[in-house]
Image 1: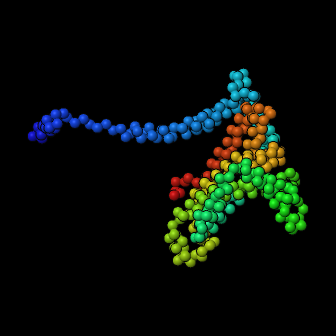
Image 2: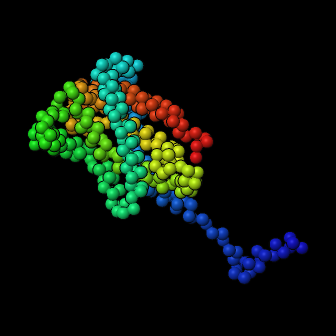
Amino acid sequence: MAVSTEAAAPDAAAGAGGRAPRPRRRTGGWRTALTFWYFVGPFLIGLLVFTYIPVVWSAYLSFFDARNTVTPLPEDFVGLGNYARMLQDAAFTDSLVTFTVFAAFVVPLTFACSLGLALLLNRVRLMRAFFRSVFFLPFSCSYVVASLVWKMSIFNGVRYGMANSVLDLFGIEDVPWLFDPSPPWYWLVIVSLRLWIQCGFYMILFIAALQQIPEHLYEAAYVDGAKPGRQTFWHITLPQLRATSVAVLMLILIAAYQAFDEFYNLIGNQAYARPPLMYLYTTALGTQQDLGRGSAGALILALIIAIVTVLQGRFLGFGNAEEK
């Protein structure tokens, strides 16, 4: 009986309208996919053309004696010779030491200043958006423009510069901030410039993390007798900021490895303050035009960044399964 009823249903539908209704085609799926690739496709093409292909080709060039050419011949193959020459080059190793000194100043100072600003602004109730904008605004400034302002207006080493004008008020002689490696006053100029530009960005990250901390944790701490301030910071605030802190430290460290603009515009190609990227720039694109050695040095630098980042994450416990 059920079979005859089911068989009669299509006939009844066909008799009522003359034709059996056709199933509707689902067109939303391919339209959604087409829209997705319409927006994402140009970015993927740009990433492929300007990032992945150059990285792969740079790795290929690092095994050849590629001077003044990006298409070396098979007989120019030198294997790991370029890597050995870069590791034995005193100028390249000195640039790594320069980075180490730069990172030793920049990483802890940027972290401390960003966290301190975030803690202060998170407590502000009046004109909060204004103060956040003021501290974040330098991040949108170009390193080139900021370097020229630092060099020509603040630390230009002459009497009418702002820094030396302040020192004159206390009877202190003018300081050649950027032109005398002993004492190395140029570190003050470079580090202060990096702090002025970057602290606002990492401050926003810390503020976002602070707003995610549940208020009941502080209330429970006050009930247990904890005093607001140092005790709640060390036992509640800082542990809750662990994931953000590790991420910020990684970003600061990687950015320090990539330092180029401020060194180039403030000091130029001086041996006493030359980061790795500047040395690789002069090697590959300067008078030598040695693209093989430059590519090998770039890969060595990328490998160092990757190793340090992984070790830092492992040491600080970033990405553990138990971390939430």
